[in-house]
Length: 149
Image (cartoon, rainbow, N blue to C red; front, side):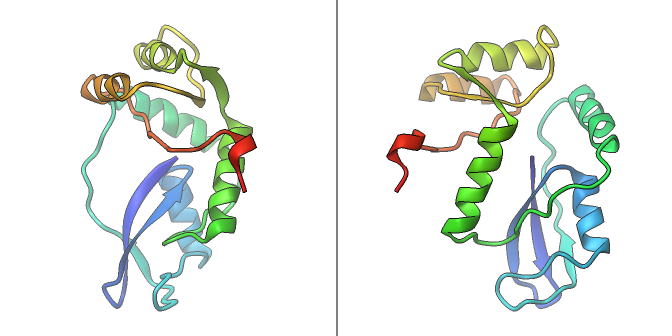
């Protein structure tokens, strides 16, 4: 997943989550993007800093090119149903590596393990170290499923 800072023609700023840059372009061409504030359909990306390694980006591009069509991801501030759908998608498309998350994320980043989506738990120190090392992770405070309401 990639997060883009977006802006509509009325200068409302918001974020959108996409499978790739190509996914954003595809959704934009098909008119699927709208501003959550005013409903404007003319939405553009804002400049943001690039985070990650170039070879990782190239592998991600080659994987995304093999995807024919992707499911639109809502943009803007999500409601509870959208958050639940996003979490369900994350759980269905990633491998749970449990408490070994930091070690496996490093192995994937270094090319010592197959590249794939993973999830698990890590301490604040481990998350900080991964980010300092340039490992592309997205810390999410997702409680265990049994704690969902």
